[in-house]
Length: 277
Image 1 (cartoon, helix red, strand yellow):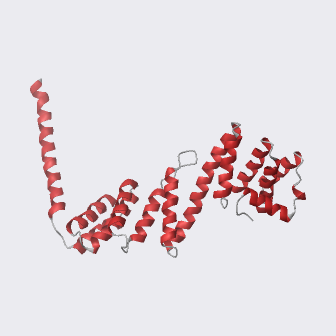
Image 2 (cartoon, one colour):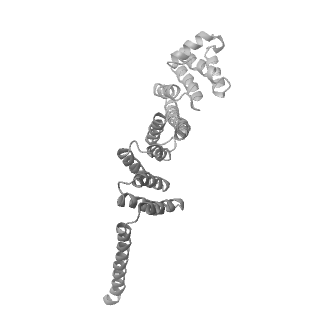
Image 3 (cartoon, rainbow, N blue to C red):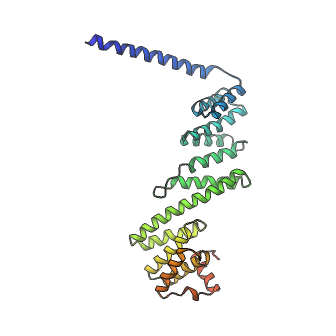
């Protein structure tokens, strides 16, 4: 019995040994067969074009290894990062862009390396119900592109993505603020809604944030602050349902928005939003 069962095991060991030798041989050929840099880079680019990303990464790494001081090695660093990004291996892609920017901060590919860094963070953004640390990293990276390369095509796309990122962060604040409001933690809710109004006032969440401030301030008995929020909402978003709801709430509390003059409105808005008009 023991002899019969040992035979397949013996064959398996032999097969593994042979497979290991063949694998080692293939790796040795990749590692030690030196090729002209243009040929090696073109092979890597061809793999990238055919979406064979794992082999593209191997070949771009080979360019760096065999020709570390060439311009192709510098380009390969970024292209390898891009190939890793396409496989959603964001950790490896970010490590590659970070290394490139540390070694070649003024390189011709630096602009794209910054952009690729931002994309890695942007593509990992999760829904507003989860932690937004990656969203904050995306915002930092996108702002970095706009600051460093304001006239570039990458900056144009970065600005569009920044609008989306800010809307996401505002949405997170609104989610938390609503929860505080439902839980009767009104002051905590006010802080969240004020942050949306002050920090993310150009996002789609601003009208609701102003309405929630009206609700919260009335709950606290702070009619002047509620009037300020309502006046700001009416001035900026007069045709929204949020303003109509706020108008009804204030009217029911004896607060007359119609009686607010233009000069009073400016004062109220500046009280609510420092620098507001």
